[in-house]
Image (cartoon, rainbow, N blue to C red; front, side, top):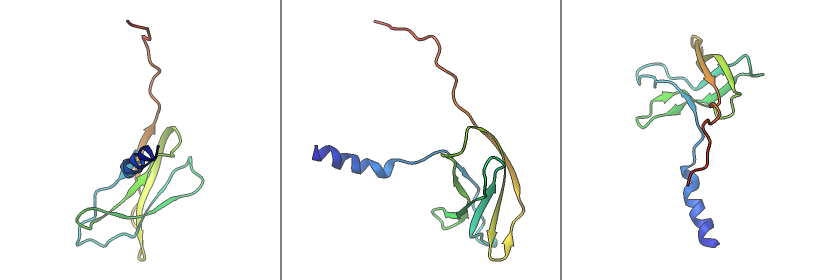
Amino acid sequence: MKNIFLLLLLFVPLAKAAPFLVSDPWAAEDVQPLQCVYTDPLESSPVIVDVSHDGQGLAYCRFDLATVKRSKHTILVWATNAGGDSEKVPFVFDVSIPNAPVGLRIVK
């Protein structure tokens, strides 16, 4: 039993939530954002996250959408830093569930 527990601990870091909404990274010479924000009419308050950084240290937006409600979403996304907010950019996506399986049968 102890070995099974240790094996499970090895796989925990491999577990990741999905899906994610990500942006392209900002160019190194551009003014860098500190946070990314989106508003969704289906949510009660804005979602604010600190920027993520890629392997080269470039900032980009990364939102975890795992808890987003099933529905069609039209959100506004922007970046912010101490100087203020960027332009708000619209983004539309649909969180839906698959169709039910069809043609179910038992085979030998």
